[in-house]
Amino acid sequence: MGLRFVKGPRYDWSPREQGIILASFYYGYLLTILPGGYLAQKFSPKWVFGSGVFLSALLSLLTPTSTAMGVTALVTLRILQGLSQGVTKPAINAIISRWSPKLERSRFSTFTMSGGLLGSVIAMPLSGVISSCSSLGGWPTVFTFFGILGCIWFVVWLYFIKDSPLDHPTISLSELQLFDQSVEEITTKRRDVPWKDIFTSLPVWAVIVAHFGSGFGFLILFTELPNYMENVLHFNIRENGEISALPYIVQAPIAWIASYFADHLRKSGELSITDIRKIFNSIGNFGPAFAITLVTMSGCRPKLVVGLICLAMALNGFCYSGYHVTHVDMSPYFASTLFGITSTVAFACGIFAPSFVGFLTSDKWPPSTK
Image (cartoon, rainbow, N blue to C red; front, side, top):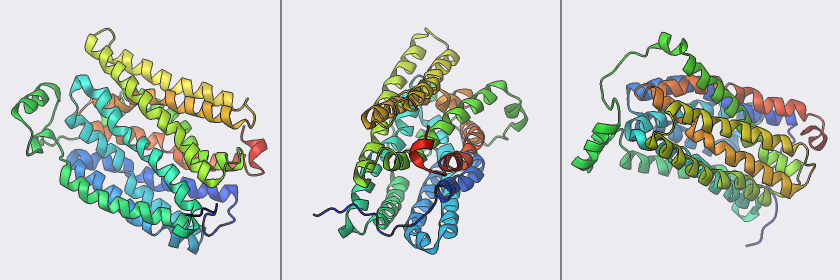
């Protein structure tokens, strides 16, 4: 199969327009995070999560058409995708709160959330291969492929996933007893959200600040890394996809190892759960900040820059045993609502991060990326 490094139709978008297109997803995402958490708590997190992914997959199928229609149409579609995906992470937190024994919570949450990392590991290089292959139709085929895959996934998800252990038809009595002892508040009883108590809680605001700080850096890397690889380090489209996946390949196993140590420390009683979350969250935020600072001093040496970015993402994996799981520690029943609140504030930066990068790099990429 002959490969030519093409992307299909090319569009002459300025860095500012690219920033708007990338940020537009978060315009919609921001609006449904909090409602998504509330709906997952009140109703079925399985259906809330599945429906969000399914609608996003359908919209993915329309991406090539909307792109051909112009920037406005593409931005509109990206906003709709954000609306559909905004409900997903809070819903997953609701499922984690119902399925994770207390002493296994860091591992359970990390393994669940790292599914997104593994998806990136597969999707980025695969997208690069598809985009570079003219016989497959170039980049439009990427959106068609993942749109169809998302629709198939939705059917599988509905068939296999249950909202809680109590709903699972084949769970054993011994397993149920384990959950009865370890999982708090697995119940269908509906409770009113204590909004005043939540917004006047200093620990909640601490999680909001931690989520915001981590989210800002992560979103810049996630949305801008492929552009940086292409325009500064000059990787071709296929290399770009493969190398952009490297940080996620590194982060996933480091996050798993960190979660094991977090649960071990909790089980041993050597540290309080608060101290464990603070330590792991500090490593997951200050470590990447130091590594990214070193990138600005590394010039355009591809191997060194890629290595530092991988180090940053690896250390960021500690956050999965930090603020990421703190919502479930604080209140298992309201975990999805709490996650919706902290994510709403944190992902507000998703609106500004790509646009901010576009503003800083509006002249030329290489001299302004520092």
